[in-house]
Image (cartoon, rainbow, N blue to C red; front, side, top):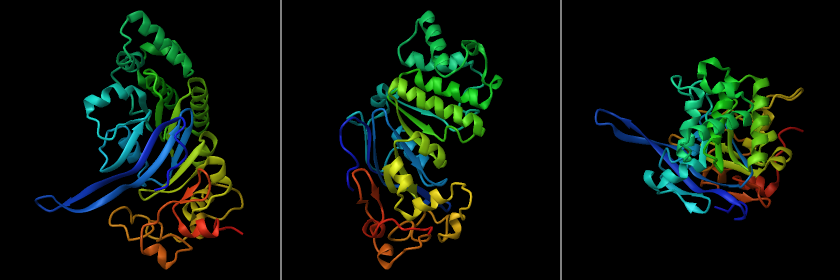
Length: 337
């Protein structure tokens, strides 16, 4: 595929990543078919920047995150972190790099061990970072909690004593404890109240400016993505359909699926996206997909060519790519007059 961006300052580069999951049936559990969870996914994240990975539930966003974290092994493709190809590294070889890539989980209630105090949970990361001295550990714990807007008094308390927003702050402090370069934020605010969401998003933004962090921000909330992210990649059925700077993507969306997502943002006087774009078979999924474009069952501008062969990225700007030959040639399709 076409290379996205330049090499300058790139902290993470993903190239043509693929991951299939077998569907087994029968007494002998033979492989009957494959779920194409991730298909030729490529993107780059520069140091100090945020890439938003957006799409409907089940499109493969979290699978991409698990592949980057090496919690799953990729079937094909490359994952390059800080100039080093980590795709085929063993667990032992990955261990020194674990502290460089951290994750903030979606569920603040389930991501903390209820049997451990806040201090014990965060201190696990400090041990990995080589901080064993008791007084040094205590000072670092206090600094981390202050950094995320928590009182040092939380050190000796348990997770059930805190609200969801406070638990997510603790999760952020735990991720920061090993001083990572890249943090994967997997729907970090979707389980929180709207008012608390804003606080956590602003905290992430402040921490990025303070510590020069890079984020892979996974979300289905485009309002949040538009506020936080520098670049956006739109994902559908395992494919990235459009990749662009955030401002450009929101002001000038090109792919029909991007239009669908943006038109679904609640806005006074705007018709529901589903009334403008064919609904198709939404669960038709990555299991036995048809030949050609993966969006063909819902696309309002489909042509015969779209059904015949897989569509590659077309470049329409320096960092703006779209997986649609028709809109790349004819320009953005106007769904709303």
